[in-house]
Image (cartoon, rainbow, N blue to C red; front, side, top):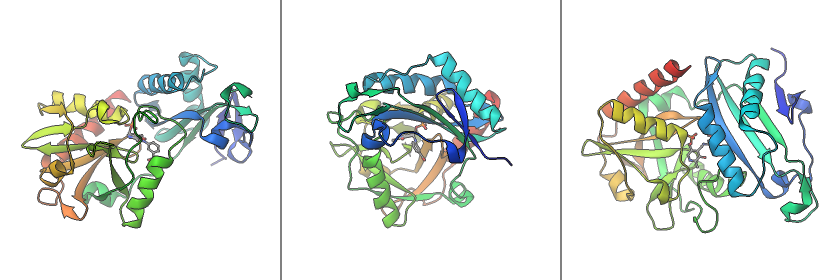
Length: 288
Ligand code: PXG
């Protein structure tokens, strides 16, 4: 297959030639926003919701995206077509643009709009079949008064530090708590538990990213007749839960069978998790 083509500000470049300035504040300071989404059968799952979240993230950091939502949607779809991808992972990035060596965002110009469409790299199938083990990171999620966790900014060091802790403990994901010690989310995924037959997930004000997969699973659970509530909980609730799983655009719905080396429920992938994984696959196919 020919080289992937990357969209930058209205033009397409072969992957190796897709470059932006080293003076870009996205690189120098992580000053910018992004989205990660998935395409199924050539259609992007919940594209409008991803775009809405991107524009909200940008607005929250006073970054004006120099392109309307409809044109950006067209650009995303064009990037997918050009690369002849049906099932793909799409990364949409908007940086503050090149500027002077100083934090001042007013001394930058030309925000860069970058769209990369590439093959999806999934977790090994083993994890979907048998479940993941996760550990609690000592790195907490961003304090909302420092930087809102609702902003999907290019500053992911907080989550990367937690991810490193997870990997050092031999786990592919790590649980992050909020500044109150409650469960927030994992480094790139939202979390759900099943307790006494009910599905629970932390509310947005627990300091999490409002995941699009999370919201889809909440809707799915309701339509499947599973009681679902957005409620704050602690690690205790996971230790005594029957089931646990994570959701994210990249991971989709993935079971968790151990937290901090302690089995959750009977240590096997649970029936409600299996039901929701199935339902999620049905949903993405039906929307594709
Ligand atoms: N929480 C956080 C902190 C995220 O970054 C999610 C939850 C899930 O949200 P969606 O909308 O995707 O259901 C995310 C987003 C990766 C990767 O490479 C994943 C995300 C972001 C960046 C990289 O796995 N997930």
